[in-house]
Length: 255
Image (cartoon, rainbow, N blue to C red; front, top):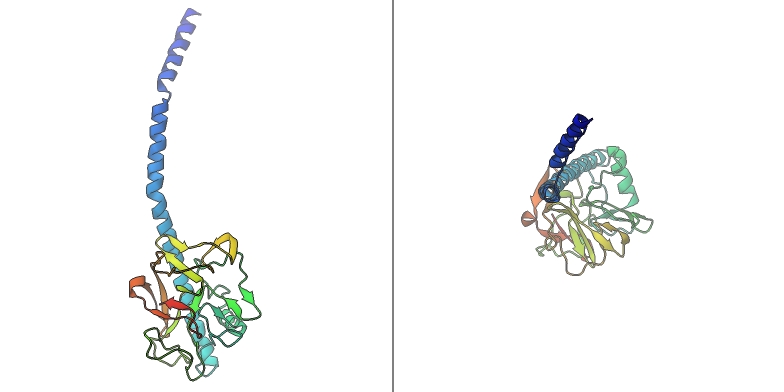
């Protein structure tokens, strides 16, 4: 028995020496915290790049659908105006949304994963569908006339037909603002989102109580821009121009 007691004492003594001290535990926790601080931004950036890729893919599908529609309708692009025949880049009439979805087979064709509306309804019988991109086709009437002044630096030509200049804009990520509205889908690590009267309980990219904010002022980094020739390119915010984003000169966009 004395030998057994000596053996147990030695085992307990060794076990006591191998236990972590409080200081050692704090050091381990601090190292884990530092690693997390280093890795989390990288993970957020990687996630954002993945969403940009999805946005780009949807935009390409949208352009293909526009051309498929044009093949059936004398080269005309789908009407970009809402149910009231007014144009706002982030909303389209019922028929246009239905046509784009049917030609593509993709119900999210006009969406970017970063463009969210929270609890705000995306369909209204008054105007149609709120979309997650800016649709830039057939924004004006058949003569391409509106309240826009052609001499304005914000003027751009909205295509009516797929046979027009291949460098005409047709779709873009929804970097838009004006009259309290703000949407910024791409900052460095994700969208700019918060609560607002439109979605008071769930943060969303769709914000309707902005004051002087613009996509550039809140850290927007850029967006995908699609042309009639089928190309979709990522443009930095510094490469974008400020454009009219509504037919009634109330909203602005970057593309």
